[in-house]
Image (cartoon, rainbow, N blue to C red; front, side, top):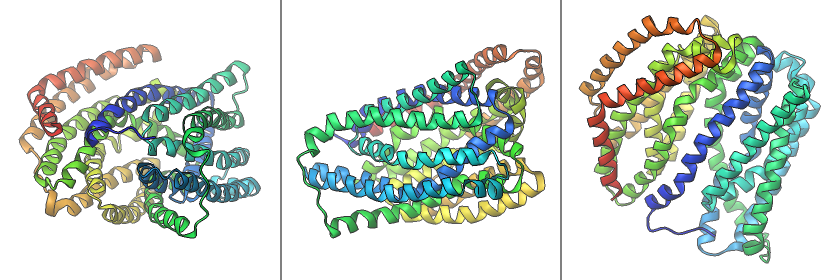
Length: 503
């Protein structure tokens, strides 16, 4: 059921090809969906739609109860032992539990939609959207279990191609709404139910044909209290970590929804879409490298872990700074290109946090090291501390400078989380930053920053949207070519060192 490879790194590198390829395919589809919706709806309506989605995301952890992590842990274990009866049993356990929680949340959404819309969203239009998304909590259980199964058996291609299809279904449905001229807030909400239904049909068919009929059909379900307890003890521990991470990721949006007006939250929604752009380009680097940490830790090669961390910190930091400067200078232009003139304020919000995004890149390195060396409890402590700090930062800054304060609080939060993670790794994995290399790049990028801001940005004031997109794309390629050429010796060293570690 699970294909075997000679080493963990080889397994991730080979299967990872599909992950990287489809990730770059998914990004344009996702942005096309966001652009179409943002162009058609008002700022307030965009906020209502994505505000409900944000609330759904927050409650999703309660629906999941950590079962996703539990399946990822136990399915490979039982498959390796060829205990397909236990695989079938834990899938049934998971579905039963998630259906109970999912139906409960769905009923709450449906019957209390008016109350939530009035007291929480402070907008009557949210009531209809909440009723539609009550169906989402029922269907999402099938999606969650099948998608998790694909990941657990390491069927990377099937997992990612199904993701591309579900996003394509969503895009097709939205385009169809445009053709029929029924681009209302409620109709866009039904688009989420549409992609979910088609995904379940496709992925369910593949799951049954490729896995269930071959491995699971003839197996009996084990109704064992011991097995059930084992599965859900692990789920509960995972649930605490997932819930903490979900709360941290949703604090800013939920506080904006509660404290400010719908229009401000609408601007913030599209700010989040812009700030995620660098991760789409750099995240594959993390996925390729971090399984190596697990291998080196299992061999107690701690000096190599420190070396990899040092190399990553040195190079990812300057890459992040290069990205962030470009996004800072052209923030309003990017918002205009993606979401039209009415969302230019989203670009202004971006300027309050984007220069601090470099610390997010560094904390991702630390958090993945903590994960691969089995320091999950330490990650939990950091997140819990960060939740408390981030809550008060948002409360202070939102009241001081409104929606811009949420972005600033988020940026400061990245710095604090990175610093805490450094403390937890200080004893065994302390590394020094290459200050001269960092200063050299800051001076170089600072000169380019000034030139872009003084001579290039004013030109865009006279360009249309498509012209701006074309010019900014060409400018971006030239910008990163100059940056890469300036650091070519260091980047060559970075690549060669990673190759040595793989060997």
